[in-house]
Image (cartoon, rainbow, N blue to C red; front, side, top):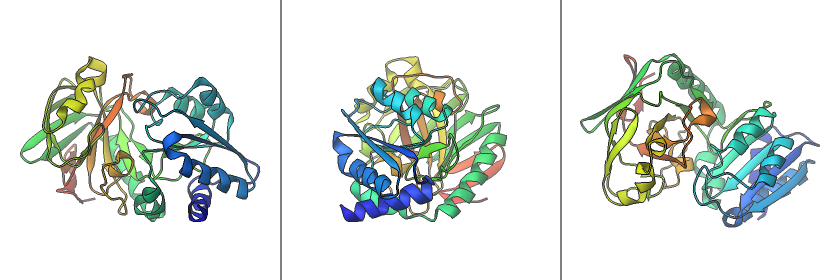
Length: 314
């Protein structure tokens, strides 16, 4: 436990910029209590007013936490949420940030991930690359992903890129930890084509064989591959089927392990997601938010080659 507390202190200081006397709220669930308790102890050691809330594990990523926790999140200076399912795209997280709370969500975090891998990155370098890619996303009208002979066009015009550099020291800043990605909410009806998901997929985990997806008018209309039945929720309604995110991994220390929190940060990967995007500039509210990782992709933003078979070109 002592080693986890020491790492937790580093996270609170270097990534969240906590200061003595601040109110630091840890939101966790039954499956991630060990990490939650380490963060709580670290906050207390640093002279903060530490608070630890433990809730029942959510049924699906994007499900809201209990109302009492949502209210507490708005009142705290800092919130860190090591949970099994993601709170990133919840109204609770959105409202807390609007109130000025600095929020780091850690969906699917494990003890191993907390102490190695993406958490060990040079976050100064991550922050620099993330800012550059975010600016490119904001200026682009269209993205094109090429993979194994499949092409997916995604329209972005008018939407703003969002950085998740793993550094949330200013009022209202929020994102994942570990982190390292730039992402954007595409136009909800603006994606057409086909793609291969071959890294990992929320609802399945690390993939042993690829998934094949068809998208028309911004909606997932067909998915095939091993365990694709696990993704039936995406075809339940138009909101769940909406391609809601395009993201680019910028963390050289991140490792593909089947847990989306780290997988989507892997350097030189691209991910798309389906479902809710209201927390980062979109207008689609769904029952879920489910990401899929594309390994060694080729990515264009307008006519600029950004990634060629997994290698950054910018």
